[in-house]
Length: 308
Figure: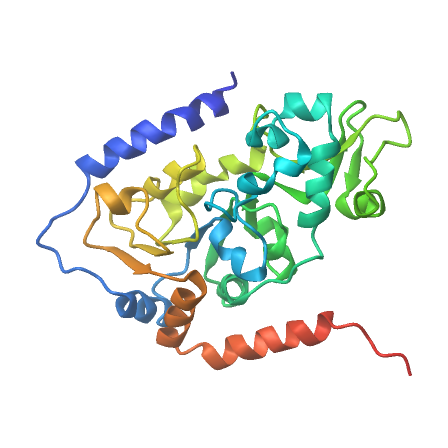
């Protein structure tokens, strides 16, 4: 096990322990969404870190993994798997890549469009206030919204690039599109090995850039957590990696992670539909018109051109 892997595995304990030993005074004034918005608007927060999960992409039509009845894991019976999670296990993929690529056809970038939540994070970047976005999503909607790759840590990998499982030759994700869309397993023209998108399967190491958290989170002056159950480690423990003086804003369907067991006075939870929660923050910021214009321009740019 590498030193980085050991560090990631220990993160859950060290940060959880930190919740209890550095939780702050219970007599401190509880912050509100309006307080957070005021500080963003006045540029008091210039190093915002965003953590995001499947809940920011489901409004774009992408199913999440765990929602009962509608999540991906509940709809995999057609692929004749020994168990649902096998579709994302590297050992099963090497044995039979067909089920994964059948699913990849549904999830492949270009089939879905970003929503208000993705564009809000892009607007934070555009205003120079985004330090980094850490996402569990593999759908590429963050990139499609305009967030530069260097501002992203795609903790579970990406469809944007791919690697031959035999000779390790690198490919652009778009190189695989014709095969994936036609239901064919992509093969390396050099060695005929299976070419796998660079998403992280169970049994694989996290991408090296995940470990940017070691420097990013101590620098953060605001942490925004959106659309995640905070159940998958080590990503989940990042919620405790910021300094105790740093406000944490949860925009989510439910309370999760440290918001359930060790809520601090500078923690704010905006519960319910994620897009509605982000819209409430945007309204409080006074950025509604600017964000609407940004989304309209992006939609117009991506629309197919009419032939004259």
